[in-house]
Image (cartoon, rainbow, N blue to C red; front, side, top):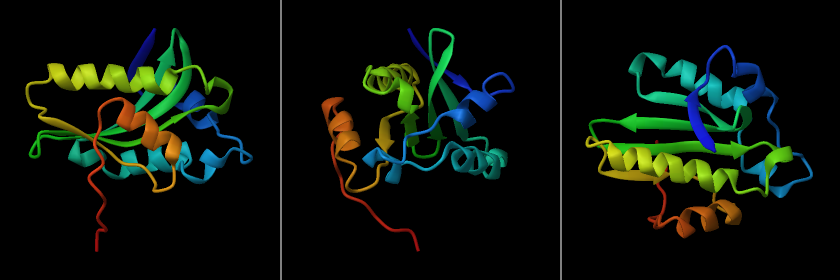
Length: 141
């Protein structure tokens, strides 16, 4: 069973150890987890960015960086990755399904947005297969 839990002292190192092989084309689309944890730390005072360990049973298999914007009533999937040794087992899909259910139960959430790098066709397929609609992108100045 997939669970999403805040990264803490017990999961921190396991999240840092998750990697995607440089030989895997997805490696160029996914920021290292150390960067994602640093981003979460930088925005910690906002209390709206949540670094989540993705567990299968009691094993950390992936990482998800979530922003919950209460003003926009939005769950924003900033990043998601599954470690190379756990890929191809549906853990990414199951983690997103868990997050979608949590968002649906949150009365303060009206929509979910996800970000991915243009060219990451596997992520695009995963998101559209879960009902996400592509809306384009914008660049912050």
